[in-house]
Image (spheres, rainbow, N blue to C red):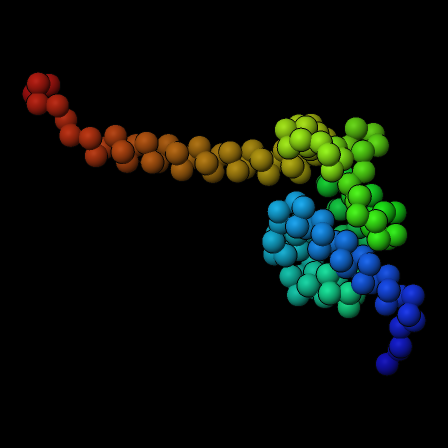
Length: 141
């Protein structure tokens, strides 16, 4: 078995705690972030625990989907969301972040429309059910 150097172990801890911090700031569960980054929940847990390093794909997802400053992540800084190129930073409000990702992410738009479609179908079914439960007025007979 290979023994990892102290530098690699420290890097794993720094990146793992940074990813856990990011996940918390985004309000995501391990399952949700793992799914988005194409990882298993167990692997993400191992990354957050400092046992493994994330894949290049996971880094790319963090950067492109959430605007994470990868240099800051590797350096262990707490200001992990960068603001260059119009990407919303940590201090931006939720509406700015939503609009940015809505305008700049096809995946985000697709997921949002799918969610809206499901909601509208559920709402339609709910309304139709509620309407069917309303007794017919007697004066219409």
